Length: 55
Image (cartoon, rainbow, N blue to C red; front, side):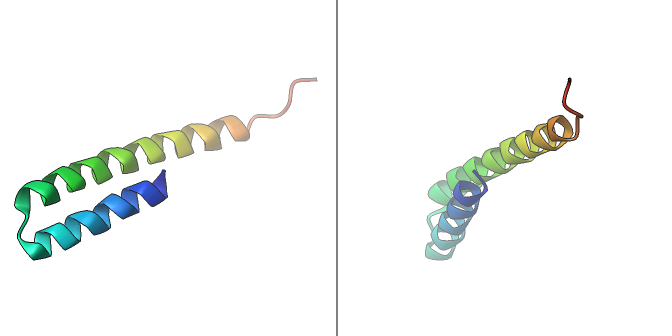
């Protein structure tokens, strides 16, 4: 998921350089949402992974 966020960020940067503000804005928002979702999933995974196994 992080790779998708980075991909959309690169698309936003390229679109911004080319003057496509609408595409750049949309790609930036998608990259932001994907990055936040990645952080939430990573935090949950980290917390759940630290639990000791129930025997």
